[in-house]
Amino acid sequence: MIDKEIFDYDFPTYLKTIADFTASELIPAEDEMVAAGAVPDRIVTRMAELGLFAISIPRSYGGLEWSMAQQVALTLEFTRASCVYRSRFSTVIGLCSQAILDHGTDEQKQRLLPEMAAGELVTAFALTEEGAGSDAGHLTTTARREGDTYIVNGSKRYITNAGWADAFVVFARTDQSIPGADGVSALIVDASSPGVRTALPAIMNGHAEAPVGEIYLENVVVPASNLLGDIEGEGLRMALRGINHARLHVAATCVGQATRMLEEVTAHLNARKQFGAPLSELGAVQATLGASFAEMEAGRALVMESARAFDEGDIPRHRIAAAKLYCSEMASRVADRCVQLMGGEGIVGPHPIPRMWRDVRALRIYEGSSPIHERNLAKAMIKQVGVDGTLPNSYRV
Ligand SMILES: Cc1cc2nc3c(=O)[nH]c(=O)nc-3n(C[C@H](O)[C@H](O)[C@H](O)COP(=O)(O)OP(=O)(O)OC[C@H]3O[C@@H](n4cnc5c(N)ncnc54)[C@H](O)[C@@H]3O)c2cc1C
Image (cartoon, rainbow, N blue to C red; front, side, top):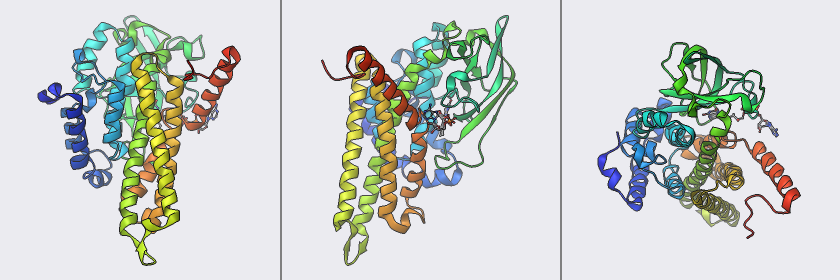
């Protein structure tokens, strides 16, 4: 439940509240979280009370309704802490709520969004399958209509919040005669339905406190009223706004992570003396720091500009893809340089840098892997230049 007074905050007050929460609660709880292997329950409760599950949901559905530029500014703050915290509410504020908002029926919006905003209904976005990752349109989970229900069969993997979700937005093929994306629909599946089983991985290469789960669906009976938007065959198109929303948040997350890593490493370099002087006085070290700062700021500018354009109406999907691609690669580059600058402490011991180096690696894979963004951007450029000689989302007027 969101604290009542939060609804009266103007944006600068809310931003400061989240910045204070990050500094006084999220960052200090990182080691506890790593030891426990999950975000502590009291932190999740506090996130809900502060409205972090509600930042993108309209006030009419119990949310805080910040603009995309404001959501990005918030993300830059709370992802100075471990990016794993964000994952705990990201599937609610991004992928799931945006699809429901854009395409859900009135009944679905009224039923689901207020509880999602309050942090009382955690949702997960269940698209990826063993045989359908980058090529998501060829998924094989099925939803067969039987009277007023669908019978869902299949399995999903790598699903963020699978272990905590109360409901899944499951993408399933409702028309077996159409092999690609056009045969896919989105259904809201109650996680406690008979026939639903989840499993968490034993090992993750970083990002481990936000474990991705497998979901098995065996003859799961789903009311037809849970077909998103009450339309078959539009599932993947309905997901698009949420996917763009999430990609931009991930790009901002990468900038937040780079900010924290550069603060941490610079403090270390100021304190650590070799050859009679702080390491931060060495020219080679300064060159690495300066280049990293410039790249981080380039990422921030791209994120802010994409958010501004998003708020204007048309989703700048190519610019968002560029932001996601650039920022996730930038965060990994910065992380790797920070490990090098830390020396042995970048590998051995409890400093946050080695943990963050592992965590940010995942950001180049989810929400569209880097090679997929490169490929899609190139395809869009080639097509658009072929039509009118301009680039997609070009600034030219
Ligand atoms: C931490 C984490 C959280 C996730 N959360 C979710 C979630 O909540 N919900 C969900 O549905 N999914 C989630 N995913 C899944 C994620 O979206 C997929 O991992 C991603 O789409 C890649 O699919 P894949 O892993 O099957 O790799 P593959 O598709 O097997 O690709 C492997 C590699 O080949 C490259 N490749 C594939 N096709 C091409 C091509 N045409 N051109 C060039 N390169 C190509 C890819 O870029 C990739 O690097 C998550 C994944 C991770 C790691």
